[in-house]
Length: 161
Image (cartoon, rainbow, N blue to C red; front, top):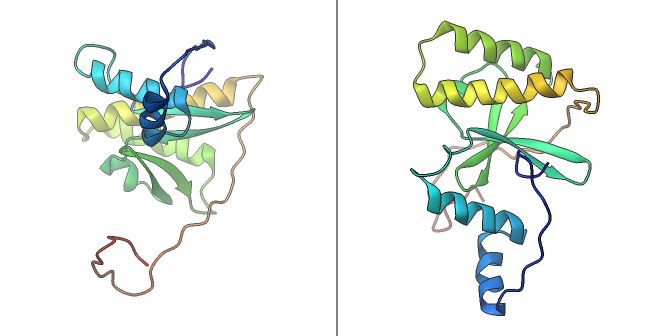
């Protein structure tokens, strides 16, 4: 599994200038090709992935579309990773099991937009499948999030620093 679905290895020969342009999209050439193919297929192919598993070696992370209802769940912080995607950071007191339960509760409350519902359902499904899988374990890890102590000012670089 790569890109959150069944995949297979292929060998390509590409011109150096095309490789350089793909590398500008993503340093993983396979991921760059998938992103461009999905961008090209928008509206015709499968719907955009609301939540997906990005594997690296025998580890994986979940990336999501950052929707408002997810940002408002207790103890959830979304960390942008580019291309309109985010990783989920949980406060120390929130477990993955609690997140899954909070997702299911938010879905059942029903007062959310269709896109938000699709994202929550996709994320809850990933967590459920991982929890039930005999070949997957779920580990919570800490990521470092830097937060400005003072009010954010616009800089020419657009960042906090």
